[in-house]
Image (tube, rainbow, N blue to C red; front, side, top):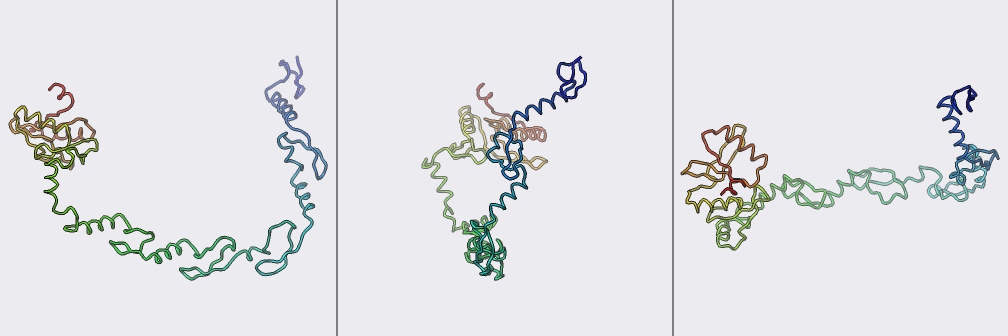
Length: 302
């Protein structure tokens, strides 16, 4: 049987009877190795500190520290307050120039509400008692009104809100005032003559490119190719002729109607979730109407 190095109990183990005794012994050894003894500058007692704190730790307690600080600062001088001209006592190297907190404050008058308020003497040129007075004063000084509702504005803008901006644009760009008024036929003629580019971004999808096929504007290049394909086959077609309204309020406009076959053809290069739901609703709510989807697989077979 062996004897525990920590509690002196008999144990079958080599050094310690349990884990707690082992951890206590190892912790004491580790702390004695890491910490070093230093003499207090005030009471001259020895105390232990970490090696990294030897330069900073010169006192054993806060009591010794403050007593040493007071002893170092016994020499004091008398100064005159910059506000009330009263004498007060302070340390030699102190930057203090006021005798109290009240002397550091300055009484001023607000430019907007004319109320008196206190501010720091060295806190800058504060002319307003709060942010509300500052913003109201700037708004009156700016003297700029909304072009739609006539309210005073806080910033250098023409309108106070998006609604006023929309209403203002509607008034200023209405009728003969609009620079494009009465030029609809001229724009269409320019498209037919080729003075504008034949490719224009579609309103529904930013990736779809449309153009004119004869006198008919089509929304995508796939629809232009399909119209050309039907003409080559000699099949009559009509483009976007009828709206189908579903029970939930959604609307659906098929691309082509073939009167000879009595079929609706939908040209889809890419099928999104919205298109899938509309096609499913069309098949379920209008079973008498025949819908043919023209996608990549159909184009490959053709």
